[in-house]
Length: 293
Ligand code: GLU
Image 1 (tube, rainbow, N blue to C red):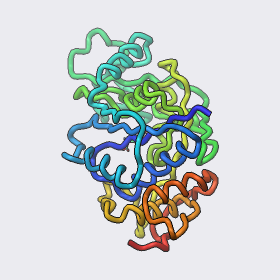
Image 2 (image 1 turned 180 degrees about the vertical axis):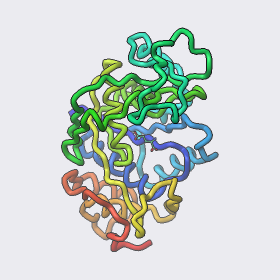
Image 3 (image 1 turned 180 degrees about the horizontal axis):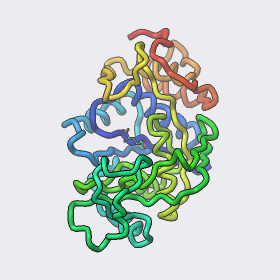
Image 4 (image 1 turned 135 degrees about the vertical axis):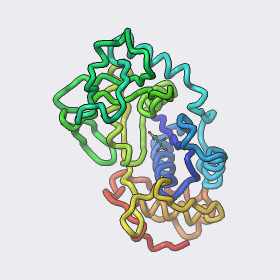
């Protein structure tokens, strides 16, 4: 099977257990399917970046034995590709300029001021919105969560693909890069599940092949809060790489590697050998862990 997966962190902080779980799942799934695994740094939003975070993430991946194929791509070097995808969307009437701030949108997110009727006259700062083609529903066969259906009324409308400040949105950039890097399988956190129909629609408008998606349940901490950089999840300790990998495998519902394995590469070899997508739990809580650091 042709398989190329990836891990695509934003450099807004160091790796925490949640991002390690995502990195590990995408790596092991790729290797278990004899696939390649790429790393892309999604540094599109400078105000949200932490200086040094990209370097820190890459060195943490190496410390955990998660070696990638090819060169690491930085999204900040890919603006021309996003510009040309946007031009195509404008040319095919799938994107339009919009001057409306959030409070001037309709409840369903559509532009209330009919900006699309005034495309040639808009001189203020404008965003580009993707004009969503209303359908009955979108169905995705998530290879971890199973079938996911979004009904038309739940689907995001007229969402931004380039912001008023000129920054490209994650939705457009991630898809352009996944396709241009030849990615076939995307494994990422369930916090991004609602982005999937948006990316699906942008992909159809750009005539891109469809990607296969698998979403890992978000991990909650002992108080039920989602583990993320925004909730100040503690960074993983690089000196505990083997323990971290064992914890991540437990969270992923995978067989624990034999106790005699004491190196990241040994743990990863075992993880690849016994990898089973079907045992990934639907919920992950840190309290489930018998292993303590
Ligand atoms: N850059 C995103 C993040 O760090 C992940 C993007 C993706 O996997 O699609 O949350």
